[in-house]
Image (cartoon, rainbow, N blue to C red; front, side, top):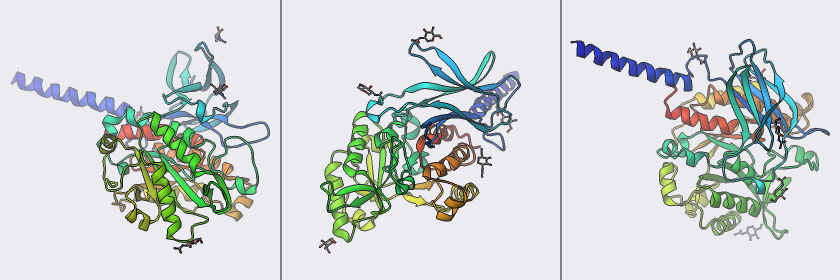
Length: 422
Ligand SMILES: *[C@@H]1O[C@H](CO)[C@@H](O)[C@H](O)[C@H]1NC(C)=O
Ligand SMILES: *[C@@H]1O[C@H](CO)[C@@H](O)[C@H](O)[C@H]1NC(C)=O
Ligand SMILES: *[C@@H]1O[C@H](CO)[C@@H](O)[C@H](O)[C@H]1NC(C)=O
Ligand SMILES: *[C@@H]1O[C@H](CO)[C@@H](O)[C@H](O)[C@H]1NC(C)=O
Ligand SMILES: *[C@@H]1O[C@H](CO)[C@@H](O)[C@H](O)[C@H]1NC(C)=O
């Protein structure tokens, strides 16, 4: 009998230990979401500012004496506090006036790095949390054990909207580019920062030598498709990550199926050593993808092409709210993230941005997609790190680093693995 009692209490202790260790990591039940702090890079450009660093905090239980600070590390590794805020509420954001330097993607490493900037939530004697502004070039492979058995549909994947419409420096050309540029990192930079879903809109220009270009709508032509292809290959050559490139919209120069066949053939030639054939299908697990030795999935938004080219996969479902306010965006995303109607095996992408509508733009004094992204990106960050962290699949954002979506996706995938939800 004594032995029996001992065994029971032993089991009880195990359960208690498990619950507390999980509770510390997840604690996502009810209103008590995980607290988080982080760094954002503002998309707003003014005469004196570009890439201003912002610090944010959410659900942080502020105690007397707590502060949140931006730290800068010098070349001998010493940390210096350069900006501090004493929060007066549990969520907030603060512009720091500190400008992140521009690092061309060709100078970024394929190993995970922190920049010299970090944010710290601390009291005099205690560091409560800290995060650095950095890259995530290897996050999938690092988590092969938890991601390997899953399908793309079951993973929270950071993506970008209209990925190739980028402008890394402030060479603003026109009102068209103000409402066309969606990113401030090139494709390689996005991938090194953690993006694994690329939304590429291709136009065909017969009068140019290049022929294939990337576009945002028919009016805005960005970089050549070859530029995008070369950067994707460079990333795949230097990592073991898995990437989806989704070829879509064809806003100009596509008159008939022969244009599509020509593009599909061009992509096949360029990506010959990289793409996974579509007979694997979206039901494939990441482990199967890794075992195949091919880590590129090419989606194509035309089913006749998918049916006639084994290189082209059924395209990702884009979920667009076409909304003009943060509240409407919340309602739309909440609807798609909480409906369980979507049983398809192909992935879906929540398009987490507002749509430019002339009336809305004029009445709200917005002057570019940069303003619109700045208005919603912190909200998107906070929503996806709390209420929708278990439902999210692909989330495609504008101006990647003004969200914290990469860090959130990584942590959510870990939380899912730990079954934090219940
Ligand atoms: C975890 O959640 C419980 C209630 O669900 C709450 O009382 C507790 O303060 C939370 N802990 C942390 C560390 O947030
Ligand atoms: C880094 O900061 C420390 C402490 O302020 C200082 O002693 C050191 O000289 C600095 N190193 C460089 C290379 O500036
Ligand atoms: C990029 O790398 C090159 C060559 O190593 C170097 O000369 C240059 O200063 C670097 N640029 C930046 C902005 O880091
Ligand atoms: C497709 O359109 C192009 C350009 O408009 C034209 O040159 C070509 O003949 C068309 N091909 C077919 C099969 O209709
Ligand atoms: C968006 O974020 C702002 C600033 O944190 C907040 O005041 C606002 O309530 C949020 N909007 C929604 C719809 O969640």
